[in-house]
View 1 (cartoon, each protein chain N blue to C red):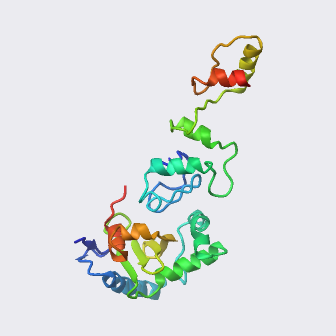
View 2 (tube, rainbow over the protein chains, first blue to last red):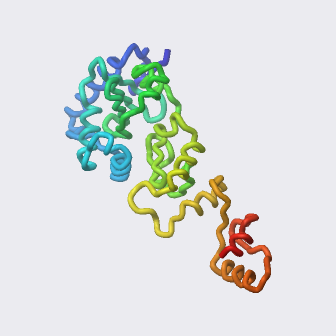
View 3 (cartoon, rainbow over the protein chains, first blue to last red):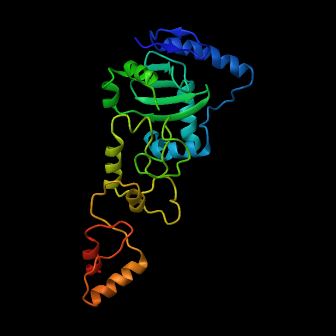
Length: 145
Length: 115
């Protein structure tokens, strides 16, 4: 079983996405109340947004960078449900990783409110990890150089 | 440096879902199921085109790959302008001496003769 270390330093067993969602709903709520979070969850830089829009925007039918960013924001902030899987990486930037089972939409954010990527994953990659839950847990356990 | 196309001016390190502006590889995504070599060969097979907006002035993908020692799908050599001229003169004069090139290869003389 993969262990997830939360940003506070506690360690939990990933019994499912609900652990992460509970933490992040609480964390996001606290930070929003203190004025740290606005209505959007932006990419880190204009280049990051533009390059991801060029690469992935058409896959969502997004006509503009702003539309693509809004879709990414909505996806990463959407309340979790039985088809939306999420976990938090225990390595590096402690990415918050999401995958929706039916659409295969995949998003990554770090430092709570900065989006790294938003794109649909191919079915083969997800199936190779045993399904959506296995895929997000694999991504969270992944150690990148 | 991008480990796929060898572009050496990436704005971010090739990791954490950053995208190379040259070949368009998204690291952590595209290289999940394929090796960098496989991605490079695919990029080359589709024309080695610049991915994001306009390429830098005088950018040349084949020169970029050659300088990095990448294996190209064909035999190539790059000659300076003066070398081409002198090689052409040599050919015209009936000489078949091997031309000098930035990247020496066995085909340079034949290419110069063909020119």
